[in-house]
Image 1: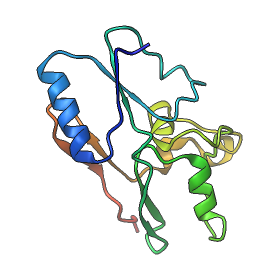
Image 2 (image 1 turned 60 degrees about the horizontal axis):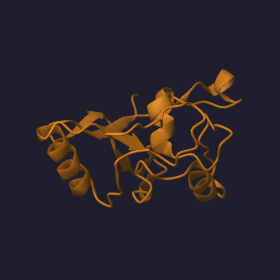
Image 3 (image 1 turned 90 degrees about the vertical axis):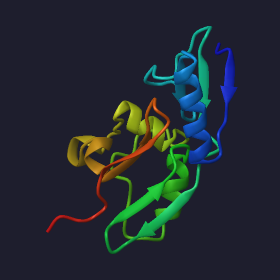
Length: 146
């Protein structure tokens, strides 16, 4: 059981928490929707859990570039519901629809369709990540290669 659970709502809150924890030698473990199937959410005493479940918004949908921008706490079921009337799908489609996209990224999840369509990492164009210095870094680009 973690000593403390923090549920940030903004990326600025994540940055402050991560920087403070790093500066004070406090171990933190990010948490998605805590399905626990991959064992990535195991916390012990002395750890702070950074629970991303309140950061669950769809920030952008661009059918032209074939991209969605979502926060780490968005559940797969909500992504699929949003895409239901569109000609797109989240192809790795792990079986746990209540899992979060952040957990999928963390574990490189993939479901039955992964054999044909690959796992999560192959469907990511860009990640924005907060590192221990508290700064937000961007890796990759949303642009479609031609």
